[in-house]
Length: 634
Image (cartoon, rainbow, N blue to C red; front, side):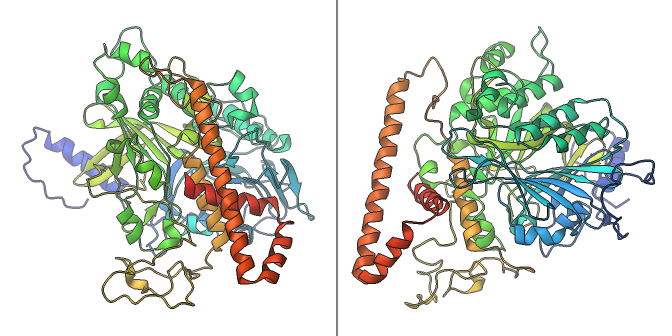
C-alpha cells in the first residue's frame, strides 16, 4: 500500500476505517496497464458465431460491465482508457451493428477485417436520401437511414455498438461518433458489457433485452438483427437503457410518451427510489444534479426545474408535497448544475481548432437576458488541456452527495435530446432527436485527498471530468461556436509581435491552425495528429448539426411550461415564430441576391456559369448552406 500523510484534520473517524478505505482506494486507482486485446487469429467466417457446441467456452473480458474513457492521443495508456481498436477487437470480430451521428467511412472501414459484416445506422438528410436500408454491392456493409417525421431538424444522434464474436456479444454505449477526432483528440466516455451468445438457446427476456430490442426497432434495424438479442444472456446486465425518438414519428408520443427522454429517466428513477405514501424517502433537500454535454442550447429555468424533478422520478407538484413546499421553484432549478467548457479552455486546449469546433454554444443564446447564467459551472477535464465531448449526468444525493446514479451516452443537455415535458404527468410533449444511453444505478461518489473516487458494482468508474465544479465567475464565458472557415481577424492579430496576414494567405490550414499565426499561439503546444486530419467539410457538417441539437424548438408545441404564473397566449407565440422565420428566410434570399450581384461584377461570364451549375446543385448542398446560415442567425 502507498504511504499517505495522515494529518490530523479534527475529524473523529476511526483510524482503522480510514486505512481500510485507503487500501481500497489504492486498489481502484492503480495505474497498472491491462491489455485486453487478443492477438489470436480470426476464425473462418462468422457462420459459427454463437454455436457453443463448436466453440470453446472462454471467460468474458467485461462480464459485469465497465466504464472506460477513449484514449487521448499522446497520453500514456492506462486501464481506464481504450482505443476504438481495443473495443472492436477486429481480429476476432464476426459481425457488428453500429450507430453514429457522423460517419467517416474512409477512416472506419479499414479497422475491420474484410470478412466482417457491418450494419451501420446513421444520420442523414431526408431531403436528399430516403429512409430505409441500403446495401453495398458485395453485401458486406448495410447502411440504415431511420425514419424521420415532419420535423425541421432530423437528427439521429444515437451511438451504440453490438459486436458479435464466436461465443459472446459486446454491448457498447458511448458519446463518440465514428470519426477520427472523437477517438483521438476529444475525450469521450463508453460503457462496455460482454454477454454470452448461444444461437442454439433462447434466453429468458430481461428488462435490458426488451428495452434494447425496442431501441433497435425504433432505429429501423432489420428484424433479423433484432432477433439476435433472444440468443444473448443479459441476466447479469445492471444498467438501464434510456432512448429518445423524434416525436414527429407519431405513435411513439401518442401511445408511449413516458418511454423516451426525460420521461423515461423519471421511470427509471421511480424504480430506483420507490415513492412511499409518507414523505421523506428521498433526501430531496440535499440532492443536486450535475449535467455535462458538448453542446449547450438555450436552457430555461423551467427546463432545469423539470429535469431536477424527473431525475428523482417526480413531477414538480409531487416534489412540493414531499418537501412540504420547503423547496422553492428557484431552489429547484438551481439544483441542476450545468457544466460547460469556458472560452479560455476552448482557446487553450492543446489540440487547437480541430478539437474546439466540437464544443458548441451560441453567443446569442448566452447573452439573452433569460439565459440562466447562475446555472453554469466550470469543469476540469481529467486530461489537462483537452476538451470533453462526453455526455454525463450525475444525480448525487444525501449528506456529502456520496450516492446516486450516473447517466452516460449520446444525450447532450438540451431539450432537443431530452425533450420538453408535462408539469403534471411524467410524459413528454416534444423531443427532436434519436438518442441512446444508459443509467448506472447505486453509484458511490467520493473525493479522497483531492482524488476522485467513483465506484459502481465494486469497480472504479473513470470520469472524463473531475467531480469538483465551480460556478462561472464574472470573467468566464462559455466556449462559443467556431467553425473551420470562420471569417474575421486571426487569433492574436492585435497582439504585439504578430504580423498581419498577407493578402493571398489562406485562412485555414489542414492542421486546424490559422495561416499567418504561430502554431505556439495556444497556451499549450499542439501535437501533430498521428493520422490524417478529417476534412473540413465533414467538421463543418458536424458543427452545424450539433448547433441544431442545441437550438431546437418545436413550432407546434409550447415554448414554456403550463405554470400558473405564465400568461402567454400560444397563438401569439406561434405567430411570432412564423414571423421571425419568414424574416430570416427573406434575409437569406437578400444575401443570395447580393452574392449573385458580386459574382457578376467580378466576372460576368464565370458568374453566369456558376449560377447555371448552381441550378442543378444537390439539395444536400443547399441544406448545408441553409443550416450554416441559420446557425449564424440564431
